[in-house]
Image: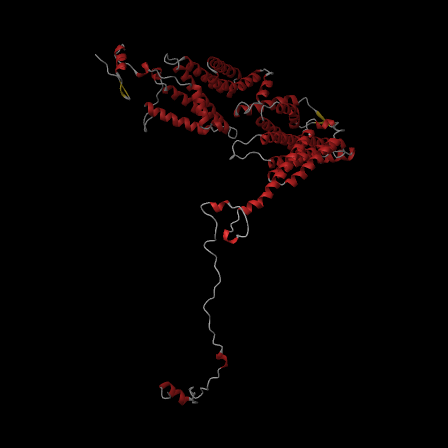
Amino acid sequence: PRTVVLSSSGYFPAWFLTLAERAPSGLLMFSDVFPERCPPVLQIIKDSQQQHGLRHGDYQRYRGYCSRRLRRLRKTLGFKMGNRYKYSGKKVTVEMVRDNRYLLLVVMEAERAWSYAMQLKQEANTEPRKRFHLMARLRKAAKHGEQLERLCESPRVDAKTKLEAQAYTAYLTGMVQFELQEWKAAMEAFNKCKTIYEKLASAFTEEQAVLYHQRVEEISPNIRYCAYNIGDQNAINDLMQMRLSAGGGGGMMAEKLEALITQTRAKQAATMSEVEWRGRTVPVKIDKARIFLLGLADNEAAIVQAANEETKERLYETLLADCRDTIQAVREELRTDVKQRAGDSAESGKVSNLQYLHSYLTYIKLWTVVRRNESMAHALQAKLKEPQTDENKRGPRPQDLIRLYDIILQSLAELSTLQGLEEDHTFQKEVALKTLIYKAYRCFFIAQSYVLVKKWSEALVLYERVLKYAREVQSKAKNLNNSLKDLPDVQELIAEVNAEKYSLQAAAILDKEDVAEAPVQQQVKDTTPLSERLDTFRLDPSLLGKQPNLVQFPPDFQPIPCKPLFFDLALNHVAFPPLDDKVEQKGKGGLTGYIKGIFGFGS
């Protein structure tokens, strides 16, 4: 008998019916003819994370997305967990893997549990009790990962999806062991995950392998951290190199990495007892100061090796934050040791060791601020020379650089007032020389800001002042060659100023010519009509146009005589006849007259 094959979209064509007749059971499923492609697990996870909160570290938002997507999948598949009155749990079986959305259901359950665990990890910094709930959620995520791996053992699942499921399960298992501080088990799980992703990356094209390489880079700091805790002392160098990368291996891993580096330096700081600066050896008894000074060279080396400006700025901010904390610790120690400091000053006539250490740390902070702002100024100068592609977007301006050099000069002014260095003439000369150099650069960018508003005279005067500062630097730098190693080259500034002066003079001449032509243009645009300038010759192309200015219309008002007004001037000279006899006389009367007046007898 002929078999009719139906689908959600209606009847299939005749060629499909022919295939159906050849099927052993007489019924052919749609997935047998068009097997759906298995979902790429890692790509689905990464896309979902980047689009729903994890770009900004918002795990709560991502967890809400996973819950909503789970609800949509269950409703679409008819895989509901009971009704509104009763819960009846269901498990995804191997037989259901005919539809790949069941695999996606398990992936979303694992992602929801993992994102909740990461959210609790952020909150556990202030509420330690939440760590228990965190571990429960991580174990739940690992359980869902194991379920995904079992489901992918079905023959309907391709080899790539099986490997991705195994790597995903190994990653979640490693996260659980990592939080439990089971370093050996965590390292084995992460190494398994890393190996699978590396094999997958080598089997596909470069475009497809980018995602796997990114996952391997995320896992590598965890592996190194586990190796260090197991006992591999060489792993600390690899971890410090990873710290230079942007993000430091993730927000959670970055915190552990910083704590590990601080712990390692604390062990090394036990052997550090003193520091030498500008010919004076100072004992260091404060642990926080020891740790900071021990890691100072590593931090400076990391800044030099930074790959981009963003990483360099982040390292500068970290170094400044550590320096401020160390200065605060030394300052508190100074407050508690006032008497001893006064005694040392009275005996030796110089500042105490603790005060000199405070000056040294303050010097490090101020000079780091100078270097950071100089680095930012170099980046802005490079952008200032680039052509602007988008006119609507605000680009860098010389005023931005002026502000940076103001901060540099303020820091140098504070350097010259450090306690214990007032009598150090070499130090004072170095600071004065650096101040001259940065004054020259600040003056240069002020001149450029005047050029933008076409104030040629002011800009030219400022350029001359830049040359004056530069010549002073060259004359004073002969005896202080060592202090110019880390400073900008003044000779390049002089060459740039000379070039700018020639450009400025040419622009000023062209601007004067434009100003001279302006009155002629104003005469051409004069609105006086032709009837009023007949005696003046002038070429006016508008007279030949459609609206020639011949006469003024409507015409202006003109004064005309108005209707006269008449005034009676003779009235003041007329004598009128007396009218006393016509005026009524009031009679004299007392009470009788009053009564008559009431009743009208007197009228």
